[in-house]
Length: 114
Length: 116
Image (cartoon, rainbow over all chains, first blue to last red; front, side, top):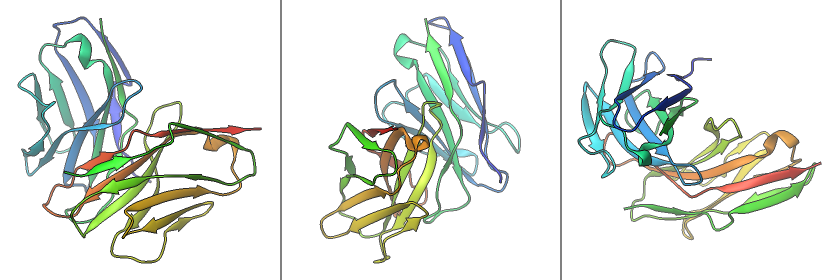
């Protein structure tokens, strides 16, 4: 069964460094998402992406964050200058179309900023 | 804006018994989906069950079933014949069907412990 994959599974970085989190959505999916879960808290929406542009973003998704789909398969989340509070689990999700389709989540990348 | 509330931070159940996890939500919309996701210690998000708001029949998926009360905005998850592998965090989630992009809004989660 197709699944969303994410790399790396764990990332440790120093405050102020740039990180890129990678996701490979399910191949025929058209809508892509990033969510964040700070340890012990609920999962929060960051951004949605469709047709090579951001369709919606939350207040968390400030200028330090960016997303892109550099080729036909990868979907990346970049944090330009990491802060301690960026430490979290980052989930990528994708779905096939608009309408009531389920979003399928990847296994997550655990980011630790020191 | 939609909100999802899970009032039970933690629950426990004996193996083979039945447990019900509660969820309420608030929305002014009529077309939406509701989900229960499971997050085991590995922290991967796994879809357990989905309910379309326009369907009156409660969704079932093997040992998992929901009690969807649209008027009351309630969406509880029942796990029958609980197994040790059911130990996980369970998140109730809401997705509006208005607009094209449909982000998912999550509740705060219920930590379920299945006791042998």
